[in-house]
Image (cartoon, rainbow, N blue to C red; front, side, top):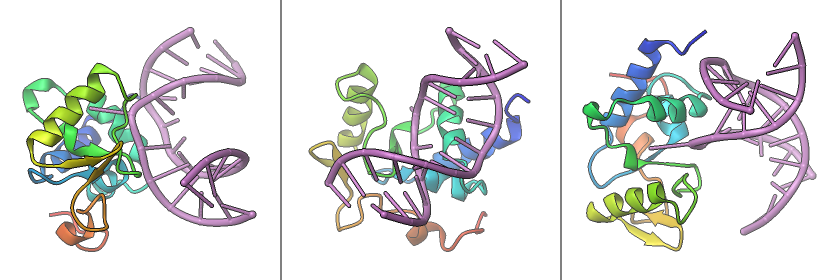
Length: 117
DNA sequence: AGGATGACAGTGT
DNA sequence: AACACTGCCATCC
């Protein structure tokens, strides 16, 4: 079964909802899209996302709060550049979103699981 | 056909 | 903190 378009669109919407200057994890996006445990699908969705959508794809990091491209790759550099342009700072390879919580968002913004607008 | 892979995560040790 | 193992599932080889 080729990936259901509706699922991709829900993921794209969840990504589009990440506010400027904030970040979220693949797992977090998946949960907010109503697809717990489908982090991998988020990666696929981003890979398949049409550029015309203008998604803030750079705001999606892995669970460790780090960019999921090989450090040194063009993609890595581009993502990091965009994040820094939004005021985010890096500590080594890890982005720091102010406070302890590297990947701040999640609950603070969307509340407990199941809460899709 | 079947194993490996991948823009990942969660739990256990 | 680091590694191992499992869940996930369309694609790739």
